[in-house]
Amino acid sequence: MPDQTPRPEYGASNGRSAPDADPELTKTGTTTVAVTASDAVVVMADRRASAGGRFVTSKDTQKVEAVHPTAAVALSGAVGSLQDYTRRLRSRADQYEIRRGDPPSVAAFATYAGNLLRNGPYRMVRPILGGVDGDGPQVYDLDGGGAVMDAPYAAKGSGTQFALGVLEREFRPDLSTEEATAAAARAVESAIERDTASGNGVTVAEITAEGVAIDAYDDPADLYDAEPHVTDADADDGAAGGEEVA
Image (tube, rainbow, N blue to C red; front, side, top):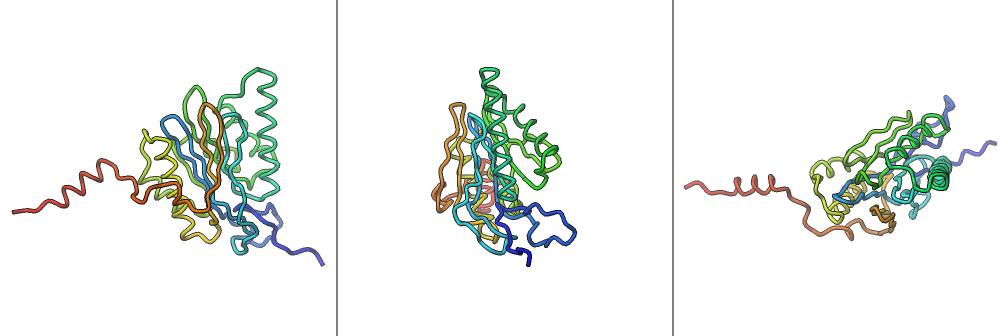
């Protein structure tokens, strides 16, 4: 009898393409986000690995990986494909630095990461790449077809809608690293509250021109204050709404 045990995943397909593949095992599930700050990028993901979004296979999965001296990826997809993909990215960055004396620019590295998705066996891998170089903080949203789209922030996985709703509200171009971290944490936490494939804390990478620092937290709330960010426009609207009319 063939082995029908669901393969663990970071949140997307198990890589099967047969017509009889169980759709419950090939749907996307997880929450990954990346946010640019004034001089840094914050990349974050939940830590739950599941089979088809139904069965929790790990509560301590690291879905954020450093792949470049000043860049990291947040990952969703089948575990085996993601591990191979990140190894290829790291190898490319190392080879480039050995040959040329400096690591590739983040933009060039993002192009390579997209080409690798398009030409390699990684169609079900869904990464977000964030990095910092001489051109400043950058975030690139990549898809299985090899598209590379730069954006001030991005989210992927089954928690995307919840996460993007928070990022739309809280993002502004001049965020400090602490504010960007808080926004990312609230975004992932919002997804965890409603998405069964996301949970068990977060892994966060803080990326600067000096390097990549990765930490894990059991509770996203440890990364932000109790009060959410309020923009000046929101404050003005609130003040206007609170005025009394004689």
